[in-house]
Image (cartoon, rainbow, N blue to C red; front, side, top):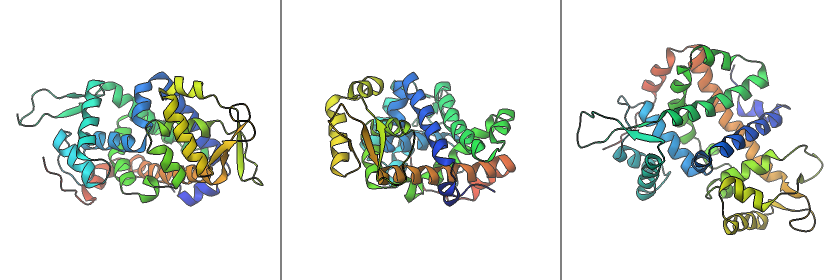
Length: 301
């Protein structure tokens, strides 16, 4: 049986699992800062999943295809981004060679786009990271199955994308989480802070993570000093983060509520990933049928 969010919230090993995942995401950000720029904010993360899913075949849509008109219309309809923001994102992805035009489009009015091999590799790695965490929690064999049939991860992505886009609890898990995750590079800063947790004192409302260096964060994640200070100032005003003593010299803390928002978000997301994993890995032939049976989304060119 796949995990539910409630199962994961009760699982004593889940915190360690999501901390491991946070460390792995930080490692990805360090090796490719431009990938970090995509996944480091909720809006861009959702747009990346949308583009990939449209190319692979969005559930309910009989024609897999990614092109500007469809992508922009989808982003606006699902309240992910404005038309200008969505179009600019796609241009940026092409400029950084995360997507490329497909030669020989049957309709000269439409330029079809596809993810490059680099993008395919990172999307597979994102899925593998989540499956590895789930295997660690229950001793499962999801990753062994993926290793035997790598294309199954690609089949999973469009279904995961739709479920995430349809999930209010994943898209809006809490005030502080949203503050970080909708800010430019805020998501990666949040992952960095969470990854520094070593223990949680259940009797305290504050979780100490040790000293942090603004210069280190700026250098690693290409975020300006002014933006980082403004982001942390807003979080401080919410009572979500702060210094235990002298600012910049003492241990930094995260509020229990902030960590709970991150925890709940991860539990909801992992519930989605595991449900799709069971659908695809247990009955591989069901994946395409599941996409066809999900409600269609009308998207115009």
